[in-house]
Amino acid sequence: MEYITTTLGNLVHQTAFFSLTWGNVVMIAVACVFLYLAIRHGFEPLLLVPIAFGMLLVNIYPDIMLHAEDAANGTGGLLYYFYVLDEWSILPSLIFMGVGAMTDFGPLIANPKSFLLGAAAQFGIFAAYLGAMAMGFSDKAAAAISIIGGADGPTSIFLAGKLGQTALMGPIAVAAYSYMSLVPIIQPPIMKLLTTEKERKIKMEQLRPVSKLERILFPVIVTIVVCTILPTTAPLVGMLMLGNLFRESGVVRQLTETASNALMYIVVILLGTSVGATTSAEAFLNIATIKIVVLGLIAFAFGTAAGVIFGKLMCIATHGKVNPLIGSAGVSAVPMAARVSQKVGAEADPTNFLLMHAMGPNVAGVIGTAVAAGTFMAIFGVGV
Image 1 (cartoon, rainbow, N blue to C red):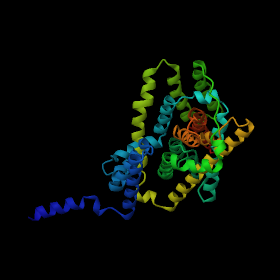
Image 2: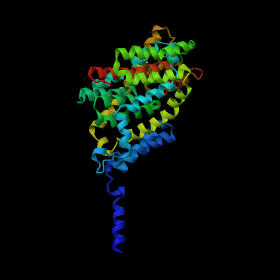
Image 3: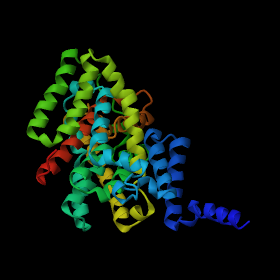
Image 4: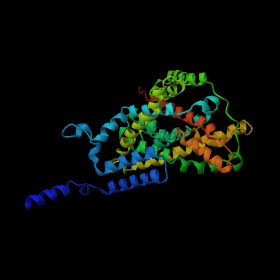
């Protein structure tokens, strides 16, 4: 009888109930909210489901993120090895290759002025950098945090790793991916506040056809120009353009399908769960994290506003030929931000079709965020 009692007692004490803190309970609740938003309301489920589940796992069983050097047998937790791929910048770079293989760069090629809208939307990044410095973060930490303003999760992870800010990587990545997922909620009020109904109803001229030669040359030329000026952007811009070259060359269909489907989804699973697993209560529930989340929201709002305001200036300069709403798509959340531009425009006029016009700034924003990250790396003398 004593043996049975001892055995049952040991089993009971092995459960997570005896190790859960109030912080773990809070984070488990947050994970459940994320799952609800992803499953019930469809807020970017490909991002939120793995992130939320990683968050759930690490707050129930912290050893799933146990570092190998801290383990008694030298073997780390499962998600620790996934996370190492984030620290080494492997997964963010592969995500960029997948995005390139999935994305049509035609609207940007057809309307090069979209680069200006993409550049304007990066204002949020530099506003967040100054804000983070003012809040007491170091220069490198501020740079890593600022990329949240571009609503670009992979680049946020990439830069945090390169600048040695691995302690902040979890909060930065979760904030960036959360705001990417919440683009349909955050952006529309800002867009409507800064535009008139007449501006939202502007119909833009159909984009010119883009030749196959232009589509093939574009990723090659962008790689040569951008990576020559800023070699530190090569892992991100290079992979983005390689994926797009797969797509546009037409001779490597198998590589295109793999990069845009199987490989992309495998990487999303690994990156999402490992990012979520960085949100243990001990690491996440602190003042620094709250500052990062607030800064990220402000930066994202600033970036959206800057894109719309620059769109208004282009509207004036072109005598009403540019709908300012497409400026909000200059953030890096592709194609979510472009879809939001289309949705808000369609609310003003159901016959208005802005999606392809918004894809130009959206793709430019992806490139712009990578360039901003490369610029910070160059400033701090960090190599690839």
